[in-house]
Length: 168
Length: 181
Image 1 (cartoon, chains in turn red, yellow):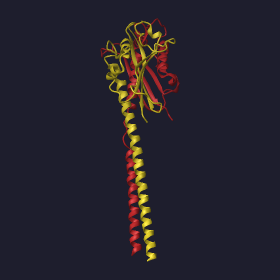
Image 2 (cartoon, chains in turn cyan, green):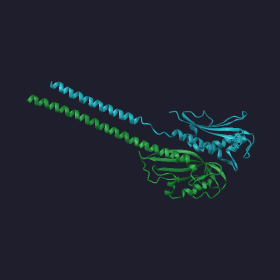
Image 3 (cartoon, chains in turn orange, cyan):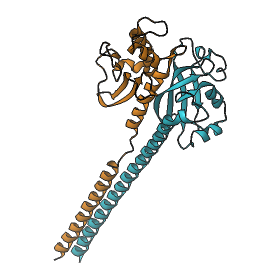
Image 4 (cartoon, chains in turn brown, orange):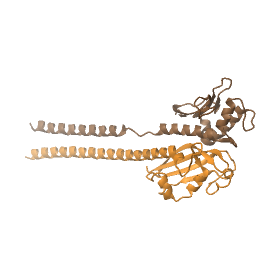
């Protein structure tokens, strides 16, 4: 009879221990799976759009911006006294991107594409490698129309910057 | 009698052992809970700081004290120069509180002038100032940042307007957020 009583006490003790372990485990699971505030994606989107807008606004020579240069290239005319507009745009865009990305320029985590609507012209792609590779890519875009204030005017080119997280 | 006394002692020791194990488990539970909750609070603090900085990053060109609203959304270099010379407390009012220590700088990246180095404070009146200097220190943390604090950088490009020459360049806005952790 005493032995049975003792066994009963031990069983209660075991149940209490098991219950405690379950509670601790549940608290741990709840804490570790709490939703996190992630702003990375939003930030990346803003970053790309800001970069596209800054590139388009920047003056390549007095009175002429990158946007003007792309328009001129799309329409087959030249600005800033340059004969080869494609090379000029490429060269200046590279200076801008190298300045912005610094040492990360050669890591293939981003890609700038200037895609002219005219089929006679090739896309400008920087850096000239396999392009942005990785996970979770985000794109910032700008549309260059011959007159952006008037909706009816034709689109001359589309400029895009795609950034991706590196593959581990 | 002696046998019963011995048995009672053993049972009492058993009970003490069980209570001891239970206390150890409770102690471990409290420790784990405390650890998790502290790290989760630190993470939340860092996330809040980051999202606050992302907000500044998105809206910096809209701040009337430094923005130019002529053609594009951009930062006026002359206004920026005047702004960086304000008292830290004045700047803090504009840049929304100091819950999170942060460092804000703008670095000129285009036009790319190899000779340009150092801070631009007080130089923007000259039309060719961008050939001489490169950075604007917009905001510094109000509190002393300890070397053990973690830091994270967020960066974006901003359009810089130079009123003296009526031209636009590109700047790199860098916000370094510090968190205790």
